[in-house]
Length: 130
Image 1 (cartoon, rainbow, N blue to C red):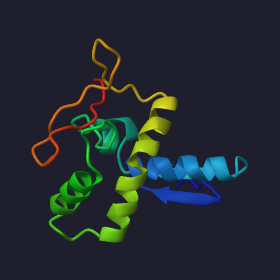
Image 2: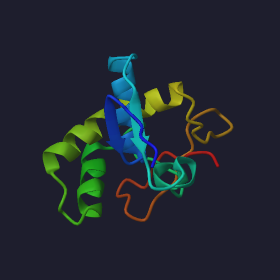
Image 3: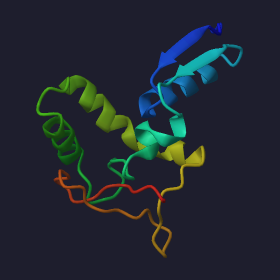
């Protein structure tokens, strides 16, 4: 058995795990961080999802719609205070993801391409380029 020593171990390499690893590294670049996944990270989790991430980014978007879409998508089992925080901070996180190199699909005019997911009350969503 191989032993690996780390200051922080993050279990799960989905979007939340990856973001936690980035936040830890930004807080203290000297930390040794272990990101643990049972499968190859580029073939699973958020990275391999159908392609898209929701955020209120356009004038016709609505925080209320995004909140309701998220809560109803979670069968009303979501912690609604957490969903409220999530919805409020999504636009900032989407901008940060783009600065880190996330290739959002674009229209010819340069705006972010949007499409509807079946649960999306507002009929829009950011789409990741394939």
